[in-house]
Length: 394
Image (cartoon, rainbow, N blue to C red; front, side, top):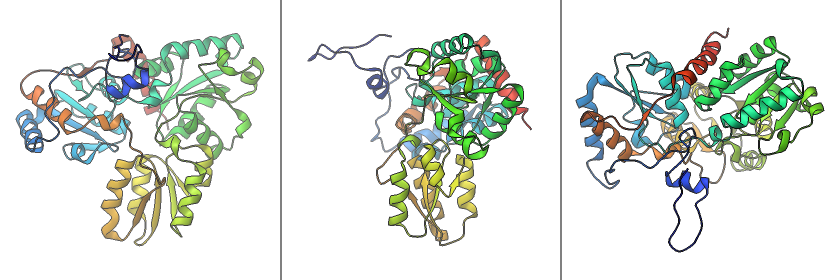
């Protein structure tokens, strides 16, 4: 990894600073690299017309995917919207599309590349659109963890289950070691399957989804769960603690969902009498325990669709989606507010803006392939094995 120094101070930018700047990073990391093209100005009044014209010129050759957390200015050009796995499957179902433009983050584009044909090319409009959660588990760290489990004499009993929000390398590790992938919608089914294969689960990389599913949905205790910290020797755990645990949770989290607190729940109940609290399972355990409803992004949307007119809702998930839902259901008399009083977008998801989308579409329309996301064949094979195990879940 190369770094740049500021002219005033003899310091090197931190990895977080480089992430926010979108510059120079390990290609195996979720942190992207500097955009190679000249972006149009955000103030260009013709951006919408330019995006529309480039998309029309490409026709059926391009298929634009828009994650729920994307900006409104971007989501308007999506052919389909959804969560990361739904979008990857939608891309695979469109083999006639030569270009898949994924308006999301890096691991999502990797999943699309894994599930689509070799003839299809997946494009990420801004390579700096990464995922801090996915970055919290590297292939080297997970391999070291497996060595720790081996030394503790329990590796043969452990089945890895990795959240969809993980890099292709982590998905490949999971496939190679007999595990499966899960989404926030099917995490319980994935864990039930894993416990049929072994006695323990290594859950990567989101500790909160793993803990909430095990304790809230499957009746385990908090004592059944231990937290593996990759930054401490042996994960900060003794061999005895590892042997006693059922769930070995990786110390990772979503920077958006992890910010919601029990105080957020208590405060909104005071501010909005009669409110229903609806949160994503990536939230902290105490938040999930205090909520009225818990579920995936698709669950959140369907719950609000079915909600009666006049009902009040506080939503604990990414702000772009909450605002979009509030506007959508306001005519039906449904009051929807953000769970926390402070604004919280997904900063890396928000890197995909209209100038980046216009640049990517116009480049493709001119016959220039840009920002392709391509997973190597060996990684793809094992990652696809783990994904196929998930698809085979009852």
